[in-house]
Amino acid sequence: MVKTLKSLPLQSAFLQKLKEVLPPNLALAEEIADVLGISTDSAYRRIRCETDLSIDEVYKITKKYSLSLDGVFSNLGDTVTFTYTKLTDNADNFEKYLNRIYGHVKAINTFPEKKITYIAEEVPIFYSFFSDKLTQFKLFYWQRSVLNIPLYQGKKFEFGLIPQAQVDVALNAFKEYRSIPSVEVWTNETIHTVLKQVEFYTESGAFQNKSDALEVLGEIKIMAAYLEQCAETGRKEVSSPTENLAMYCSDVVLGTNCIYINTGPSKYAYITFNSLNSLTTNNQEFCEETEHWVKNIVKKSSLISGVGEKQRFKFFSQMNKMIDACYERVSML
Image (cartoon, rainbow, N blue to C red; front, side, top):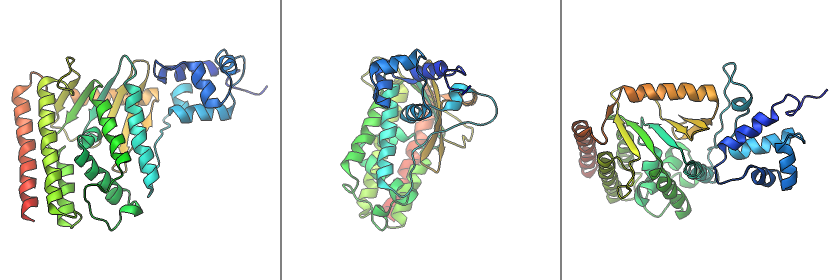
């Protein structure tokens, strides 16, 4: 007898996992019909396990919803399947990467129960999209210096060089992130990386005009003021009546950027690699281990949002001193 998902029986488990990761506003049958290009009746027959899902159909579904088979069928052993967006010397791939980020946070926002925990060795990627001008600089830096995209090699940064479509997607991702309840763990050195990027570009002549470098630092200063206000109110949207931010400062060297997402029935872990990209998995055991690590980091950190007034003042005073010192150094170059 040929073993299928139905006869194993794993088709039900697979479809149940798919249902868990789907945003609550999407119907399972309609989504399966759309992805597989079949009728709704045919989709229902697969849901009831009257018709087997083929290997090709399973592949299409896992590809569309970043669903790992090992997360569905087994958590045994030490193998975990991750998904990622290829980012190799290609501006089109980078645009797909930005759309993937936007798509993920937009989907997370559809769940009634959701929380993002962000362990931030560097400034969380969403704050890189805090403003139009800061976004332009970060997108240029990543494409020119990290991804080596040919289009930007030999070019110097100036405002207006990055396609507005890329900037808009990034700004929309930040807008979505602002409304998602979050726990963020920073260190006193988290702001350091972006400041070094601006200073390095100034020293190496990668800015068309030094005034642009100073303007980018001005945007970082405004971002720091925004963050301080968010930490004080516990809100990423200050006008919102609902507190949705718990911000911590860690004295422990974090060693990596890590995002852990809990939407109730589903959990996801995002692990940074190659400076910018991330590996994503919903493998149950891996996510549970990530959750355990994240909780330990939070437990050993100092709360600087809400009631942590003394720690908050110290943290942001140091951040602003670092920004001001960088501004002074760049001004003198």
